[in-house]
Amino acid sequence: MPIIIRLDVELARRKMGVAEFAERVGITPANVSVLKNGRAKAIRLSTLEAMCEVLQCQPGDLLEWVPDDPSGK
Image 1: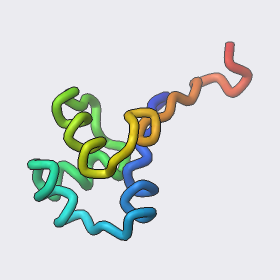
Image 2 (image 1 turned 30 degrees about the vertical axis):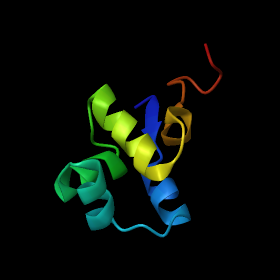
Image 3 (image 1 turned 135 degrees about the vertical axis):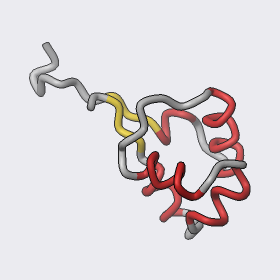
């Protein structure tokens, strides 16, 4: 998948658990797990905004694009 969600890194930096994060963002712990494990196919912008607000970060801190072809072509 060319988009990588680095939620686990940001949670670890803040020493925040999944349950606390889920409650503060307003999503279920199961959905946090889906995001952390890279199984999400979509994310609402309102959810991304809430995640950034809770973590005090930018969307680019949570999302990274990686080309399918390592040469970038």
